[in-house]
Image (tube, rainbow, N blue to C red):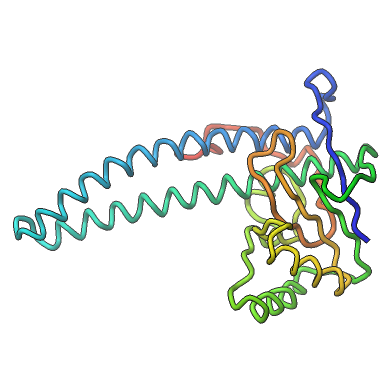
Length: 238
């Protein structure tokens, strides 16, 4: 059966400096901060590019510039929009990593408690022996039921999880709110299939994003010694 979990905000004075989960969380939060700065830069650049493109469109319609010039501006704007979406996606994935790390931290310290169903997180432990390849069963159900691909945001161990020192090799994150019709149907399928999952209804304190469904058992940290030191090379745009 499902277990709902509540979280209390931990004060800075109560954090152990050598807590390995804190290392994962803090490093990811720094990465999100860098991404947010990069996003703002791309958005400002795209705003200017959109203005230029509108001008070029009028000039092209009037036959005053070549198709080559018009297409070059169109491609430039499209590239900027793609970069903005990529950064937004990275921010979202980073936020889910933070949420999952906070959950793992709470579980490791025995802070998780039974709470009413309306709390932030639902943890369901299934009887099936889950492995990453089983995601094809979930994808098949979702496509058959909704006619669209399962909105996977992180499949197994991503570069980001490795960089931040978090073990996600046997888990899948799905960008669905658990209280949405699709989220409820997916959770019911996972329950009846005996598949473990964690449903995050909202952002946890300090997380960069909100709801998602984590398929598989709770992730764990990678030994803190494997987390590389933060350098300028790790930061976006460097």
